[in-house]
Amino acid sequence: MSELTSKFIAVDDALAAMEHAWESGWTDGLPIVPPTPDLVTRFLAYVGLDPDTIVGTYEVRNRAVTAEKIAINAVMAGCKPEYMSVVVAAIEAVTDPEFHLNHIASTSSPWPAFMVNGPIAKEIGLNNGMYVLGPGNRANTTIGRAVSLTLSNCLDARVGGVQQGTMGNPCRLGGLVVAEIEDTPWEPLSALAGFEPGRNAVTAFGTMEPPVDIRVYGMPHVNTAEGLSSVLAEYLAEGYFSPGPHLILVSPSWQRPYLEEGWTKRDLVKYLQEKTRTTVARLKKKGRWSHYMARQGDFAEKGLSGEHFDSANKSNENGVPVVEPGDDQRFVYHARSERKTEYLIGVAGGDVGAFAVILKPYPIGPNLVIKPIKPAAGV
Image (cartoon, rainbow, N blue to C red; front, side):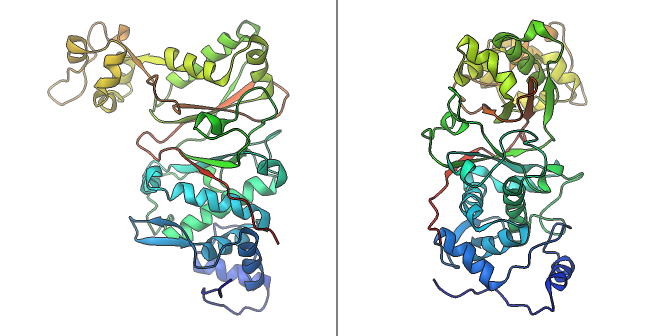
């Protein structure tokens, strides 16, 4: 392995190292583990990467991220060496041109979220059960934090750099890394995105808002596969009604009726594609119609075309869409049937109630990207 090339800084102790990191803008406001040469070298050795190996590039800033820089930030985040292969795959995913990382600079404050599939999740102790979206698990929290620190320190994804978020995104602090419960008849989420079941993979996608929490306590009339699916479709139709990949996490209790009735993940996706819709009138009233004007091809598939589209597209002298008679009966569907990744279904959380959460995407990117997690070299 070649020598480390980063600048060495002499400090008196660990507290002084943390103070220096805070003063230099290298941290997120939380304490860090000082990235000593010994630790950084151990992290690199675990994944068998030379320090100068380029893991990802960011053309917008003309920057490259090396394995050494990722290891430094992973150490600072509090990772173990065995987490490095997941961190590296996550950086590969978000720096893939298809992900469109430049969109995280938006004033809407989008930020990447990650789903980990495969045996590695259990091997390194990623949480997929109780309190899965909360803090408290070292692997989930520090892997997400390592990605956040790497993007901040290496690609200027911070205030004062390219970050322009008006309100910020609470999902960034500690990241949002989830492992899936895979010991069920349902295929893993990575398979919906085209990967073989049982293969270690990380799926990255952009999320703009905190998760939308759904529960059906005291609602026995929806405790069927179709009833639960209708609840999801109703929630997906509310709010921003954004196109793009949505991550839907269902608890084991929510999943159970699907298994009992023989529904697969693909059955649920098909239902959501066919049932998730809203009206032209509602989109106009919420100021969302202009975004969908550019998707006339999507509407044509569902029957809103020709004179219907022209009528729905009327605006006043100020360019404001006019709610026309019949707009409350003209429906816009959320997804087209060929978009297999419009709805990503994952199973996670505690088995104490029928809960689900929806993580909605930033409407114009980043896009979903999935990367294999390469086997660690080990030490």
